[in-house]
Image (cartoon, rainbow, N blue to C red; front, side, top):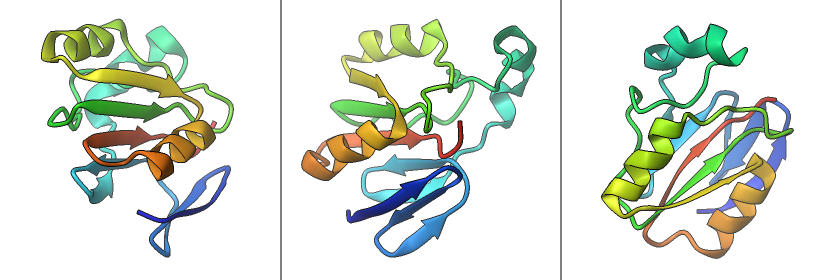
Length: 116
């Protein structure tokens, strides 16, 4: 995958501009569906990443890009589920996540937050 520009609210992958959060699952890109996690919004002040979402677990490594300023909360249940499944979890701001994916994308899936 070719990661180009990333700015607040926008990410370019393989020449396509995404203006929403994305999930990369075994080389395929789809929109992150946050609705299952919205019920936790008040608790975190932001819609977090929760195990209620369709997280792409079929991988050895899962990179979670927490946004431009690292503001996406990742619930503890996600960390526990990763350990249970034997998936190495990397939780970093999206810019760093993109650099990691560009360097090592084989066997790696991702959830990338494109704003805050």
